[in-house]
Image (cartoon, rainbow, N blue to C red):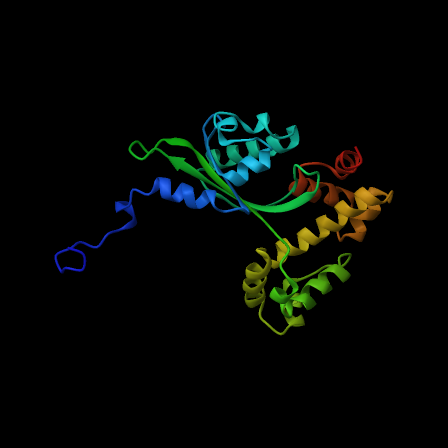
Length: 247
């Protein structure tokens, strides 16, 4: 009987709750979830993922691959991430990405992918992935972090150190990291990179400034460094991004 001394304490392994977990994941409007097999075919997705693809139902996504729904650049990125997870047998955690939404607007996401093994044999069978949409927090949620954020925006062309950012509001680097992570979902280094890439994307789209000049203005060492880091987050070169944004 529940509460009796003879009853055994349950562990999570005792729960048969796959359907309940999927229902919870399906209710997350700002988290994109999918599970893939080793051939890259989707075997489960949530409603947010369906909306991300532009499909009308899960049935039109299950059994398909990234190349059926996303442009070549994105599909290539996803396949490289998957291959990394399978090759290393390790999770890919908190990968910051700038992605063009179906509306044409760009949005920032943090992606985590975990390898999945067969319950009995231990052989790899696929992976699961979540991507969290990084929404802009309300000003009231930022408190004195607004001073840090303003400093980053005002000093992009310079070297920005985490210790200097922490000193602005009189906290330790670890404290700043925890507070910024709670407020915007990013570490200080990720946040600085996000602001740099955002500024660069804006200038590439809305000005005719030389790409090398944009890179320097946004704090990149030179055009080579700019191209490498911009490609890391957008899977395109600055020139390709500019051309696609004006198409």
